[in-house]
Image (cartoon, rainbow, N blue to C red; front, side):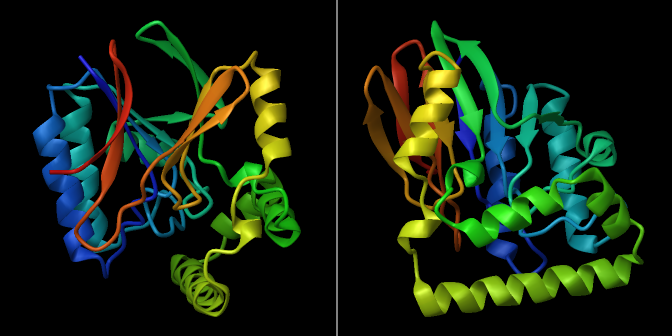
Length: 236
C-alpha cells in the first residue's frame, strides 16, 4: 500500500472547512494506506499539550481512531513546535525528529518540515534556535494557558501582517546551500518537506526534493509514495 505525506494544514478554531477536510481525509484513508506522515504545522499554533480548546476534540479523536488501524507520524513545524508526549497520548500519533530518514518502497527518504533550510531568514533562524531551547520551552509552558493563547494570537497576527506586506519573499524559501548540505550529510536521499507553501519537484545532483502542497480554504494536496515512485496529488 502507498504511504501518504501531508504538511501545513494550519488547523485552527476559525478554519472549520479545513478542519472538516482533515476529518474527511482521515476517514477516507484509514486502513487503506500503509502510513500517514504529517510534516509540520498541522495546527496554526500549539500552546501546549494541556490546551483544552473545544475545536481540538474532533481532530484529536479522529487521529486516535486513524492510528488504531494505520501508522500515524507527526513532525513538529514552526507553528506547533511545542507538541509533546501529551499530544502523542491524545492523538495516538508518534512524534518524529527533524530531520528523519526512513526507507520505504526501495527508497531512502529524508523527511523535514523545511523551516531549518530557510537560512537566508536570519531573524527567523534566531527565533527558531531560541524556541527550540528546552529552558525557553519550559518557561513558556509554565505560563497560564490564557497567556499562552494571547502570545500565540499576537504572533499569528504579526505573521499575517508580514505576509500581506511582503508576500512570499526569497528569504522565506529554502537555500540551495542548506539543501545540499543536508542531502550530503545523509548520502543524498530523496528529500520531502513542507513549510514554504511552494509545491514543486526539484533536482539536486544525484537526488531530488519534493515540496508538499499546503492546505487552505477547503482544498489541499498530498504526496503519494508507492512502488511506482512519488506523485503530488490533490485531495479529491
